[in-house]
Length: 48
Image (cartoon, rainbow, N blue to C red; front, side, top):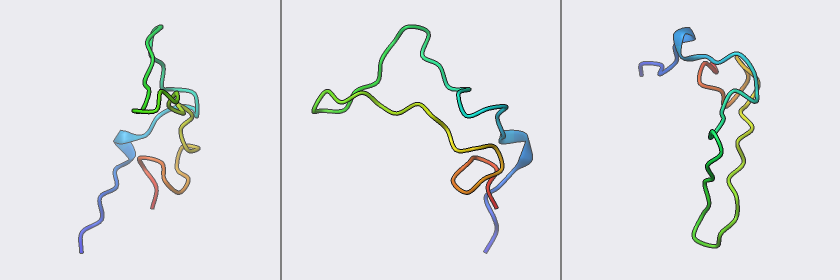
């Protein structure tokens, strides 16, 4: 099975996701968590 990982998809910090004043909410109006996994850690875009 081929891995789906790539170092060029990584980000700089856990707070790299920003909404520029917008919001993301679910159907119950709970705000989304925007904190990303540490770069290179499990569940990050580059995790192995």
